Every structure is written in structure tokens, then in C-alpha cells.
Image (cartoon, rainbow, N blue to C red; front, side):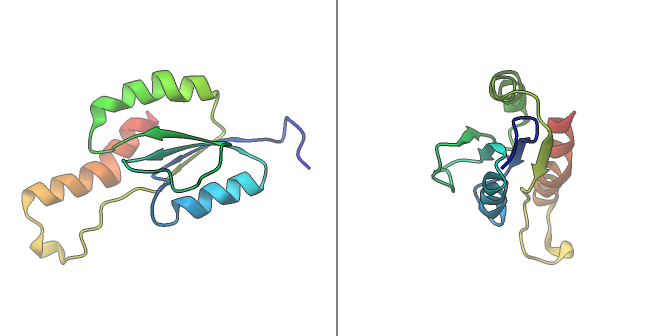
Length: 116
């Protein structure tokens, strides 16, 4: 059993899809506190111990609110896990400029901006 000083505060960005729900469950199983984001829709893990926040990496204007309100209320973070990404599933030569910009925004620029 963890002591209060062993409990980590974890923020899982993109926790509603792919391997995000498994990460959330894994941290919960280890006794950690979890704040998790979803781009929209329902939380992927129905557990009252998880704090869910809406966060869309394609809307960087929302980052300030998430950090100033949600993360501040949750407390100091020990671990941040970035899982989201846009993966169109096509050859790079088939990307137009708009799709390339969306992929780079979600997969790199927004994640770096949120961490900053």
C-alpha cells in the first residue's frame, strides 16, 4: 500500500482513446491520482477517482483555462503522459497542406505548447 508521499499526481492527455484508458486504469491500480483529458465525448474510464477535463489539442486557445483552472485545482503534477495524435493513415505524399498542418499541430506543436 502506498503512503501519501508515494502517491503520484498524473495527467494523462488524450486518455479517452487508443491506449489512454489502459494508462488511466494502470495509474489508478498503482494508487495514483489521475487527471485525464478527452477531446470530447464521454470519459473512457467510469471511475469517480478520475478527474476528467475537456481538452482539444487543435484548439490551443483552451490551454490557458485547462492549466489555470483544472490543473491548478488538481495540484502539482508528478507525471504528464501525452497520448493523443492525429494519424490519417495515408501516404505522406497524399497529405495536403491543411492535413499536414493539423497533424503537426496535434502531434507536436500543441503538446509542446501545453507542456510549456
